[in-house]
Image (cartoon, rainbow, N blue to C red; front, side, top):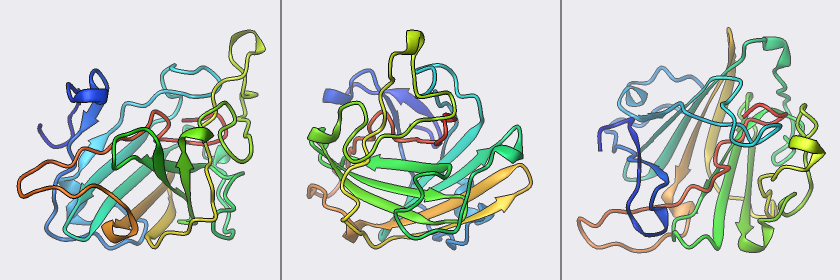
Length: 225
């Protein structure tokens, strides 16, 4: 698969779902919140996102670019969250796991591809971290601890509630690096997640790692995803 392409998969439970191949990069990016390192130029780039709220499945109302890459040590994510109106940006310098009221990007990783457990990592526009363990029992509407509403009211057609991404158990604190910065039209952020902070199946030489990224892997809060 070419770097940056997203295609339907034909692998087991991934059949028919979009997949992306993260490339290996030689020089790790410096995690300072800016996407100006050479490694991001060859990273996989994802831009096609849809809403969760208020209209589940509708095209995203704001443009977002997500970059993915890895090396021998870390899995890297880069984010450029654009805004048509920068007055809508919500970002605060708060404690870890306290960004519930902020716009943030959240990734869910399912290394065992069994839809039973996921590792959650999030970052806001100032690089404030959030993380949690999400289990299968957290997958109802409202998802785990706490329920959130977007600016659209959190409801679907006819006032029916829409699904909310599970929040999991924030007591789990992983070791990872993150940073974020405000830019002219938006904010950008970076993450470096050490593989040693994750559990994943052992593979033999030459075997491909296939990880699941649940439907709500990209989560621009406050109703803009």
